[in-house]
Image (cartoon, rainbow, N blue to C red; front, side):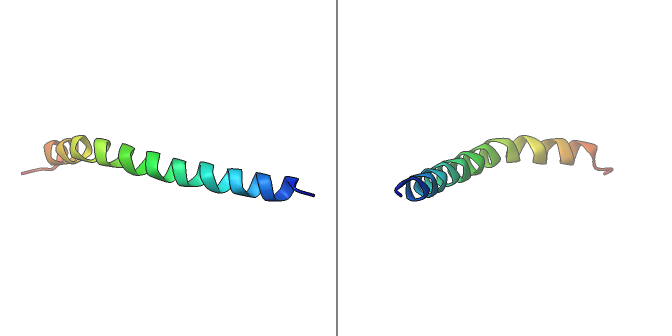
Length: 43
C-alpha cells in the first residue's frame, strides 16, 4: 500500500538532487565552453 508513495517521493528527491547537480555542472562548464567558442569563432 505504501510502496507507490515511497517510490514517488524517492523519485522526486532524486530528480531535485539531479536538477541541482546539473545546474552546478552547467555553471562550472559554461565558462570553458564560452572560451572554446570564442577561440573557434573567426575574428
